[in-house]
View (spheres, rainbow, N blue to C red):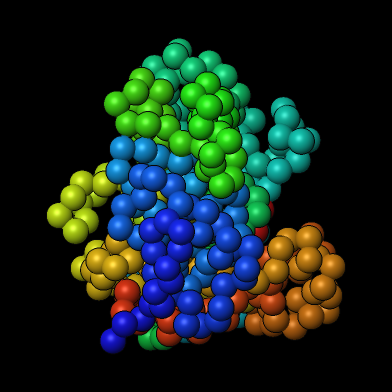
Length: 406
């Protein structure tokens, strides 16, 4: 059964998994704009969580030949998810989970204060010894990038390692349908990745101006870098480093989370079910017999047997999935439910009482600062999962019982 709808455009076709609900017109225009680019390979794929983004939609999969669009890759380079299943069961948990949330919040720096300055609670003031050792393994590659592109440097390059951030990033304790306890988190490459992404987006725009290409672009945020140029190679090197940093960041946070909660829980072990996946990245892959660059902007790789994580919202649970290897999606699936309200609209529309009702039974912060992350701001995750039954199969459904937000 075909799970996507086919749309012809002025450029390459669109294949959209939009059967859960039609995509917003602003997002459709962005998809059509991307499809016009001369280096698009075969078609542009849109996952069921598509929504408006910068240049390209969040939830799109863009295969290209000989070029990459830095703004399509974005600035939260390597953003993704990690989840681990434990031997702990629901009946072994304490009656009250507040101490669990507090322990996680103390163990993992989160949020942002002091405008990201010296007293920012979301960064390490003094880097712990174990993180210093991890950073030293990554430092030489970073120095090489920054020596050539000093304006791509982040002042918090080491001090953001093992930290959560803000926005839709989170740490959760969950239960699956067999009442096994899981821990799950969502974050990326933090300040270093953001600075690298922002820097090369601007460099791409200057390249478009230098060669008078900018006037032909359907959107200035679709400025691109061309393969076999020094700047392209430098960008790929920097992005791959940031993606590795993001993966390491998630592993460090997970280790800190597990260590913190063990003081409050019955003894447990982590099972072999461990998933760590990007959903905001670029990589070289082979599709339809050709080697191409694949940009997943809010999408998870779902080759046959690949394990992925698809969160709904802070109140609607998540899914651990296994890829079915659907080539038409370039072996991809959604990275979540997808927003149906902008952050500004959510804060104006959703009341604190509505948010508290949606979060009933979950140990979490319940204040007006996170109304933009309330479940009502997101699409229906059940419909999103139904729309991609040809992309993934569900292995576990998780429901959160503790939620930590930045």
